[in-house]
Amino acid sequence: MQQQAADVLLATQTALSQASALAVQYSFSVLGAVILLVLGWALAGFASRWAYEGLSRVHGIDETLARFFTNVLRYALLILVFITVLGQFGVHTASIIAALGAAGLAIGLALQGTLQNIAAGIMLLILRPFRVGEYIETSSVAGTVREIGLFATELRTADGLYRLAPNSTLWNTPITNFSREATRRNELKIKVEDDLDQSMETLMGLAKADSRVLTSPQPSVFIDSLGDGATFVTLRYWAKTGDWWGVSRDMAKRVKLAFDENNPAALPDAPNPAPAKTSNGRAAAEKPAPTRQ
Image (cartoon, rainbow, N blue to C red):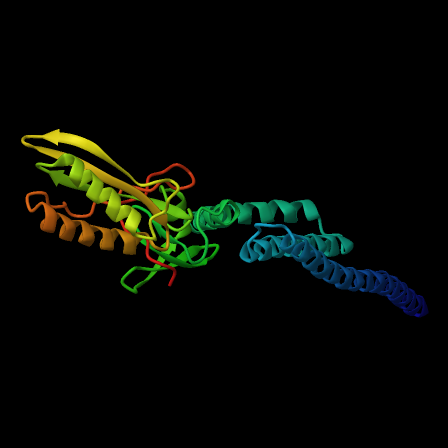
């Protein structure tokens, strides 16, 4: 009986000793994990702020893009800290990394369209085919850019409507930017049935009389084509982008009045603005570029 009591006492002492050793061991592990977590959190915050300040100094980097990259850096560091903390408790981090990779792949497949918009948004913010305040047109949308986000771009149409265009839609289609270039060209085609020289002089005089028509490049008048009993003459001139639509309307009216007074047989056709070339060489649609709204 005494021997059994001694065995129980010895077993109890051994268990208490082992528990005490484990408590000391894990207390140091917990303390180290807490310290590592705090330091890692602070380091992630400092690194993200430092990266944001550095990107903000880079010319041409959009604030939205800078915040996106710094947030990616911050969360990547936090995930690394979390995995390191788990390693303090003997957890196999390789399996965690594999699980995170599989989860990331599943999420990527589920959010494929959303990720395409994010990738397109990053490319739009880096390459800058358009900026806030510029008027653009694609095959599906046209309007003044109000905000460029990572997922979508906000636009205001010429008739005052709000449009939200997914970035992938904008990135995967040709973009015509009506506001990027400082000047635009316009053409006005006139049908002349007689007195060709006088008609061409009248057109040139009207172009030179408008102060909004640029002198460099100089306006030009030339024979565009020949028809049955008539000649088609084109007036070509350049104007500042902000003046382009006003000049084109006023010029059409003045040409109409001048030809009605001097040569009733020669009436101007409807205004037919020539496509303006954008910075990437694409032709702009025959549509006025409204001023910034």
